[in-house]
Length: 249
Image (cartoon, rainbow, N blue to C red; front, side):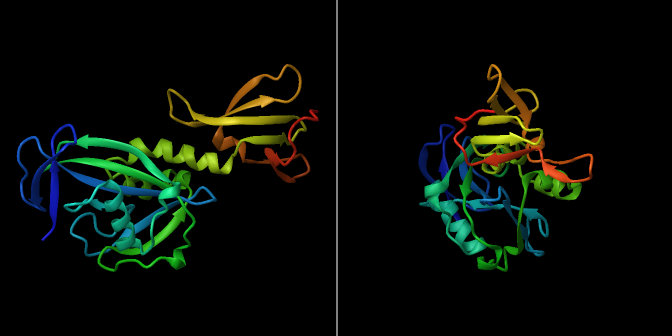
């Protein structure tokens, strides 16, 4: 029997509990947690749910579930990751990316979506057979480029809201602050990345290391693109440099 603690609309524990599947009292909520991961390549972790799951079977999703009675958000996500994927999340590299409150029958819920930066190889994971049948690391933009995969992930209430921030954090891993040389020769300093205010597209914010040092922005998706030269050679649009930028071109 799975029991949940109940919260009021201000996310204050009421001292009440609810058995899973039973209707909750008016104005009460339970806690749901989900985990997103990014590795050092900027890839995110997906799990394929077991074929005989009663909810959303045989689709790609992420680690998550309801907090049990007595668990706070951190304890709940640690248990879910360990149970479903067989490894412990690294809280020294983790934080709550977003929280929300939703109305739903038979009981409303609060949801915390955690984000962890962690390198755990697929072969080191031990999936819970009743929950998970497969797993993979994948770049966030490759999820969006696959219509069926994108549709499956959108079964998660929070996915469309969380995705721009997941992609931004992924791009920050792949485009760290520092000095870069454009394939045409000019040098630039990446100051950071941010989201476009209208489209939520990740943008690189960078400064020219020549002329008047103008500040530029460019879609992050373009930054690491391969450009084909006139001789057919492929080169990266911007190449990271180890120098400190003091000897400006």
